[in-house]
Image (cartoon, rainbow, N blue to C red; front, side, top):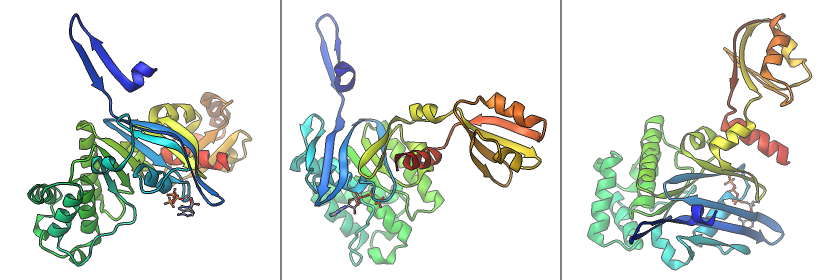
Length: 319
Ligand code: ATP
């Protein structure tokens, strides 16, 4: 275990090659605010080249967790290490943060804001300027370089905010709702950028309420509620664990026939098809046999549950 998760040592006749895998490790983290336990014994690890989804309903404790990772607030108990060291002030330049609450200096020019933030992250003025221009170009914002922030549309302001989180080429990127306010084209642009960061070996912590986005981007997730972990692991394993008893069906006939079957846990009717969740103890073919004499079935397939569905079921179960 230790070997697999911390580092690999390749040994040949006389060459010792050590490749250290950089990781963010959150261990038994808790945070109390007076009587409220906002985060309760949270543990997870994120490796380079991975997108980790920190998910949960409103008030789950995601922002509090992120603020502890950023060293903005101190944990009540537990520890956070990055690249093997406890996080401290030096960590500041290695991390990029896109907050959910955006705060740009509205009256400043775009280029000045970029230079200012680059300087905060220890870049020289010319380096910050060059990086800023490069990012403005790649996000089709170059024409707005000398405009004041307040003159930009909300979506373009959002893209500037995104640039601020990456201008210093951070190793760890924490993105809180990176797609809010963006149109589908810009969402796609940002999605592709995030995926390109993975190829570069960055570590990405993504917090979002958009489950379809999390599903497309994250390899691992942690679902929390009321400060506690309710689900954790690789997305594919989680889907397998929850899968098997969801069925998509198209039929002609009375839907009440399905609804009234005792082992039906959920039944959702949409325009062109319906989705059914059956009890785990019943096999899909048994369900098909039961309904096929009374309904005219044109489609029947076992489907993977969406992350949205897993989220809702897991949160419901935990309350
Ligand atoms: P959302 O999805 O709505 O942004 P969240 O998962 O980010 O929610 P947090 O903002 O971390 O949730 O809040 C978790 C809990 O901690 C909530 O009950 C919140 O009211 C409480 N909380 C957060 N910050 C403070 C604070 N500074 N003082 C007191 N309570 C706080």
